[in-house]
Image (cartoon, rainbow, N blue to C red; front, side, top):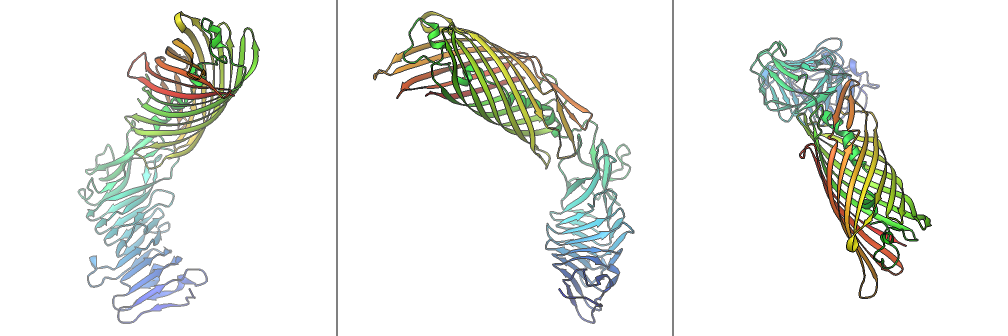
Length: 594
């Protein structure tokens, strides 16, 4: 604290000056700091000062930025050499999360000295489109940065460069193929990670110079790392052009490069997104939802098909849990993706009796659902994942005819939220919102057979739509969706054996087991995502699917109430190509008649 009026003037000997004042109220830029003779150290300690004038700091051998944030407002700082210093110049050290900034907007800045970035949180920043020239060596354990919101900056290192876990921060405009550039004049040692700020609004394929050198052999392919980075639809990687290949860039050096077919790994995810959500949005069959319909109170009398098919004169509450896996390899896709989806759903409902007559009974009620899933998407462009979950409400209405005919209708709306991640990229997309709408109509006719056997041909038509909000991805990639619809028809045939008995206490018990075979046909098998307003990703799933399943219901009466446990396990495969689409699922539920 305190005030600073004129400056500091050292004499002979090794002087130390510690500055803990800022610019406000100090007239700091007019102050002079002269270290005099000896090996002198000037330290900015735990302060913020944006008025440092390098020309006013003379005859110092060591300059330390210790936990401070300082900015130079002129264009040079000279540090004298001392016994044991490298390159005959002094040392500029940034430590303890310090930050030093040069501004080259008006003119280049020259640091006559060696630069040391002592820890991971310490930063040296060159701002502006000019060059910061460091005459000595650079030892980087922190961040050497040119990030200021626009490309075109330069840091030129006259001596050797050594990285010990250090990073290089640059601005890149992937639309104009421009970047900040670091120039190496000496040897390069250690491994440097590259941190990229995308400051453009578009992208295109091509080569972007980020590092050049006065010696073609100075840059080793193992000395810089970035993995993959992306902008728009393209993925960029490091390319070492050590000989100045004219097809890439005439300057030997290190480039960011994307070819015309180098799509970033989020692109297959966007193409698969709607298909995944349509899988999550499917409605069950009536039997999967509530088991084997409704039992007449007491023991079922043999020989009457209508006995089992008619609803009880009471309300029923049910709860079911579903777990499933689905693999989908579309028959046509721009990115050639496939995905594996695992999901868990909990659904509950209440059914009330709305009509009872000699012809049958009408049952209806509300439903609630929660669904959670994980989809792994693979393609030649990389792997990615979608983690959606959703909450939904709906309703059902079912007619149980006394002649064995039934009609079941469902409607449901679900609100989804998804997290998106590409495995080769650092950033993901959080909280992508969407809505799912689904309706279905199912009909069936029970036909009696011998000794409690029942054959039930059935048909169901589903319509489902997902409406995913448009969003901007983690790498400036604008994404919109359309054609997220499904119109799915199911034809099925179930064969079941039902029985009823009294236990030792005279309690009525009921049970059935069944096998079912289904064929599905998808009429709307195409989805489209559009990236960057023009790049359309259209894929088509195979339309035909076959499925077999096995299940049953077990029911009993106790304390004036009826209970039932029910479940089904099933497996499916694509009929166009068995390996292209397959899945399996199981559900179990409980139903209580109050």
